[in-house]
Length: 340
Image (cartoon, rainbow, N blue to C red):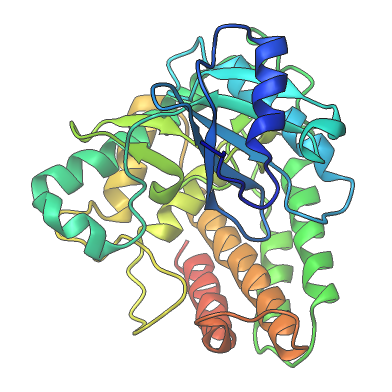
C-alpha cells in the first residue's frame, strides 16, 4: 500500500522520524490528509489504521519566522496539558527541517466538532447549544486561572504595556493595508487609545478564542481547545472581548465571516460576561473597551484581506464581499465604545 502524500507532508519520512523518536507509536504505513490549509499553519490528520494523530506545520513556502510558531504552540499545549484546560496531548516537536521541510509537531487526535455557524449548531437544539457555549466560557475561566509561572510559562510573553502594544501593532497593520478611505476607523483607534483600561494580573491568553477553535464532544462538553498560534501572556479580558464580539449576531447574507450567535439557545453577550465575572472573580466593568478592540482588530484583519484582494493577491469565494463588512465592524466598534 503506498502512503497518501498531501502537500507538505511525506508520510514515509514522518513514519521514519516517529519510529526513531517514539518507537512503537506507529504500527504500519501512514496515511495523511490535509484538514486545514491556508495562510495560517497547516493541519493534517494522520493514521496507521489504528492510531490517529494530528500534525501541525507552517504554510508551504512561508517566511522563516514561523519556525518559532511551532515551538510556541507545542510549548503552550505541553504546559497546559496537565492542567484543567482541555488540550490534545502533545507527542513530539521536530525542529529538523529535513524531515518535512519545516518544523512541525505531532499531537493526539481528539474526537469532536468545531461549530462554525449557527446552521451547524441548529441540530443540537437550544438546550444543548446553550450548554456548549456556556462551557466555552467556563473553559476560558479555567485557562485564565492557570498560574503561568507554575506551568513554566512565566516568560511566554511581555504582559507589561500589553494593551498599548496591541493597539499600536494593529494600528501599524492598518497603515500597511490602506487602499481606501475608511470612515471612522482612525476615530475608533484613537478613542481606544484614550480609554486604555488598567489590565488585571496577566494570564495565558489564547488570542483567538471562539467556538470554532474548540472541539465539542457528543456530550456537549469541550474536549480540546485548538489553534494556539496567537497565544501569549497578557490581558485575559482580550479573550473575553473577542468572545463577546463573536456572540453578536451579524445580519449578513452570504457573509464570509460567520458567527454562531444566531443559533437558538445561544446565550447573549451579557450572560457570557456575567458568567465569566462570577466564575473568575475578575472585574469585567471595562468589557465594552475589550469588545470594541475586538471589532477594531477584526476590521483591520478584514481590511487587509480586502486590500490584498483588490491587488489581485487573494482569490476565493466571498473575498469580493469582505470590503463591505469593514465599515460594519468599525460602526460596531464605535457604538460599543460609546455604550460602554
